[in-house]
Image (tube, rainbow over the protein chains, first blue to last red):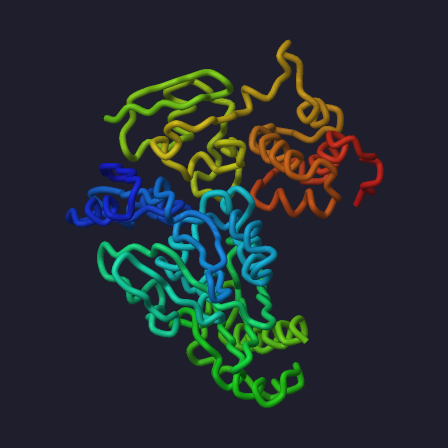
Length: 263
Length: 161
């Protein structure tokens, strides 16, 4: 790692001030960022840890029934604290990485990084969640802008993510066992006003909504409604773990499993 | 350099570290607690697992300054007060849960974290919990057996494969 200054503010305001320094970068749990720094793929002048900000910790239920997760909340905490209020989200958090990674990694870090194979982007987009930052609220549909790219400005911090709780939801992850990321993961949420299907791990453009599947499921909510529906393999990721066609096939399979789990 | 202070295995310690100093480096290089192993240095293998405020974490993937003020437990703090092996360590010996021993500190620390939150895990739960701990020689079978035995359950129920 290149050398950097380390700061650990205790308030959002102090963190925002620290991040105003040139080339300063926010540090969530560091489960992706620290390996990245070790490879010298990033060289921030300062790391601003968000782990000491108590107002960004924990899971709570808001007045309208939605579940709000503080940006610095670890996956392990979401897995336990959201288990009763939003079980599908808790189940997703409990499948990220391994236990030691879940004790450090945070929702804000994962969502801000927008790894194309990460689990949380699927949960956030599939739920139609709202990303709250120190300056504004961003709808999930407007937040994810392609692989490792988001609507966040420099120095902007995800303070919490607000999830409307669907009638039923399921995250189906086809595990890539070496990396523990999703080879393909599908988060399906069924609301009174329609179904949302978000796919991670598959596309060159990062997480995306499979709108054809959503339309079919709005007409008939059953795995059979997806018969004959396929995503275009053209934009799928191809690597040594799976071809474009394989990933496209998995998108259909995992979506059907998610429907079955919600039926 | 910044001063960092924490409790390690019940003792208050402090030292001057850089921002980039990893917790694993602080333990090994500053405190000479070399029982915590660094295998892959990419947070995959789990040889560096320690407890921070009771939770298993990969110490090669956490900055020492992030552990300021915390209570850290390492493999050196696992033995009984008289220096004898604790229940988990003894079970690893009894069931041949190690060969070269490189992964063992992390395996024992993960096992301890598992048994704290789930005192009587099933075989499947043990295997699931050890997903982030890699062993390159013994294989996992005897490690799983050892953890079953350490939890007071019949390790014989795990059939040889």
